[in-house]
Length: 62
Ligand code: SF4
Image 1 (cartoon, rainbow, N blue to C red):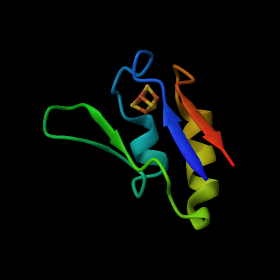
Image 2: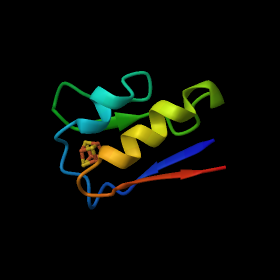
Image 3: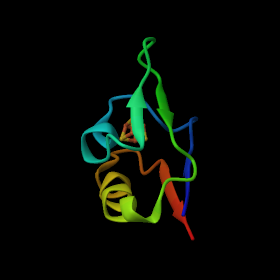
């Protein structure tokens, strides 16, 4: 599974972090960081994160 976040859209509010903290985090500067190739076991959480992102900035492939 590949995760791509459009950082031009992302506004760093962190809804995805609540949905899938294993994959998404906010760094010390408050900017989103994420795992771009998470384990497939995290698929449900990643898809939930994509669903809750208000900017629809998260794409899941594979
Ligand atoms: S929920 Fe979407 S806009 Fe918010 S931090 Fe995550 S990717 Fe960025």
